[in-house]
Length: 270
Ligand SMILES: [Zn+2]
Image (cartoon, rainbow, N blue to C red; front, side):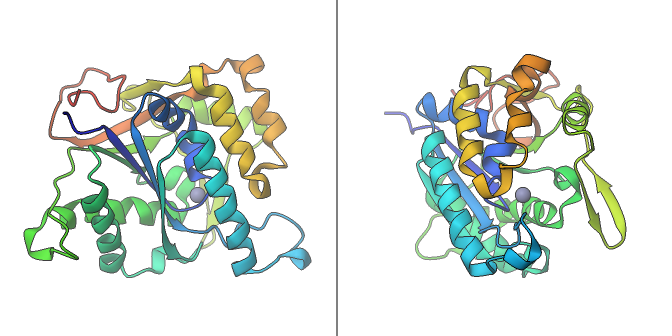
């Protein structure tokens, strides 16, 4: 019997999975792919209400972990692994330790495909950039036979992808929200960074899973309550395809190549 297909998404915060690539995760789970979610933090600093009502790191972390678990159930994910870092502090984590944690999960789960943030962290979020870098390091460490940990065999990941937002999606989002997604870091405003359509060479049409993806987003009530109505307008205003045809950059593949666009994260593996 063939090994089951497995997809691992390695994220920084609860809601990254749903807002970032929920439609695609729902599609693959529905097709029988074993989806696992790795989340570095519990989103402890994601309070969106008045400062005086902030429940504190631990309490918000519990709320957001529950939201993540609900979203994962909706998406059909098989398992969730939390790395126990604190939201906002991830780029201060020891990179070797963080990479080893992810490497151990790669060895245990042995996915054929792993996906993480792009080097811009979508809009320059230091946690997103950190998890992208830790994942790249983890791929190296997982393959090193001298780093055997807990009896786990070395593992060579066949394919790694960055989840990327194409420029048309960034433009649509800015128009829909009336402002560009951004984050201020060390006095500089970092804007939502779009990839050229040609560079986002892997395009997964998950528009048939729109409702499931939106249900997963709605699970993250503490984060999306203020703008989910706008997201629900997308199909009428722009069509589902602009968001639910999700785009990825193939960082490396040991099983296929070439500049032809792909329409399947498992291309070369089936
Ligand atoms: Zn995030």
